[in-house]
Length: 336
Image 1: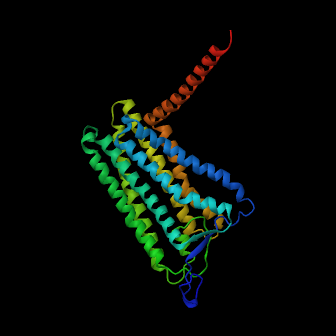
Image 2: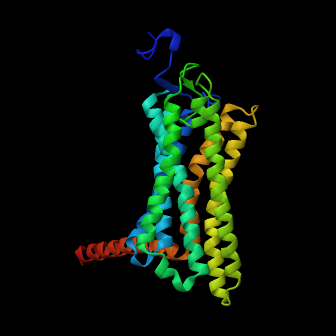
């Protein structure tokens, strides 16, 4: 019998693994737990603050802000799919995980990443209609259309993530039970699989190329037309506002796609790069959007920023007034 209890020694396939992320960091691993925990709490808190602001303020119940809130909600889910298990790996050098748990984590990682891409497409469509067809914006960008776009985004994400997970589940993992990565990524799992993996590699590469190429073509075409239309606006203030809003979206797009591109190049081309560097690039790719997106939208989007400032100032003023009333009450209680 094999180690998993249900395979023969001639057809061994591990059903549990050890995640060993950043193998070069041995003595310093526990020192990273606190800053990484702070990073995770900051990601969740910052994204949740912007989401709460959009939900609480009726003036922000517009398609653009709803899409921003959805994108930030996906950021929270993506970081939650990665960070808890990553932190566990920094506490314990060998981080155990079952095959089912590994496949579940892999599904949520790719599902949320693909949702990011699809929501960016929906945001590009929203800005295209708002700037190129402003008079028809309220007629076109309805709640019904938002629902259709959300359904399309989820369906398209499932259509890519599910086949990758199903195909990976059918592989035989007989090389080793040690995954030299902090999370269950597709390429990391294939690196310990045995047999002919040509189809798996080609399918994974084809899906990524088709998805990224198609999305970038649509995004490039949309924002080219959006920027061109923005420069045709006669009002300087309206033109500056349109370009400023598009600038925020383009910053987010560059963050997501450039970090993903650098990770793919290193994994597939630079064989001499150390495992720690590869894992670091993966961590940046998976966590950077969640860290930067709430800052980009919370700071650069004037309407969201103003409501957050009012919320913070309101809390501070209420605390100050409470302290003043306590002081006055205390002074009255003092004997004359």
